[in-house]
Image: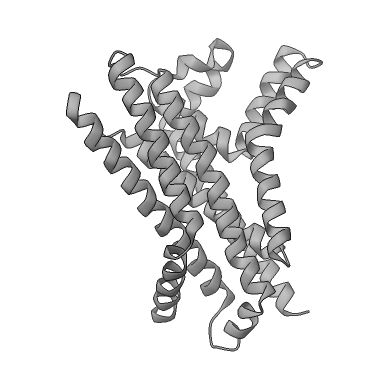
Length: 271
């Protein structure tokens, strides 16, 4: 435990010195404040799923994966490329300690940036109306940070150089955020309604961005946004069993990449 905490502390110090992390925090805060100001002066206050909440969610799901995947993957690949990882392995430290330390340091660093951004938004919004915390949005933001931090560790473990890790990270980000949508639209041009519905439901489990977006829509009380076609899907995930299944799938999105990264790094070490 002392080794893990020491490693996490060292990694967080490295993260704090990373300019990309501050760029992420600045961009996130600027965009969230802009959306909040638009809501304050141009839109009526409402508790429903509006363009305001949709914009908030889209900004989070656009920036968080991009910066988390790239920064996390580069962190591990740079260790591998510079032989720092090999040097660390000469000390009595397990690979699991290394990957967990990287993961916790990433999550902690991004959560600090999120906390700063949300705090400024609450301060600004409290000027003209009572400040309220969207607990669901905040919770799913934490889930997003954990999921994409775990994926970034996996991507970094797969890479042998920083260029390769950056390419993989951007490729994964582009697939989840851009290519996925075009794939669904292309599939909709030749699949029947029932087949397309089943395909979309299956792919929702395999795309963490859509998984988190769907979770917010469902648990914010706006399941009708998905339409009557997905009534059974929505009804199940609003039950106790469905909520447990949502938590389980979210946990698997974190655990499986970390397990995979451990296996990959062990194989690399044995070469």
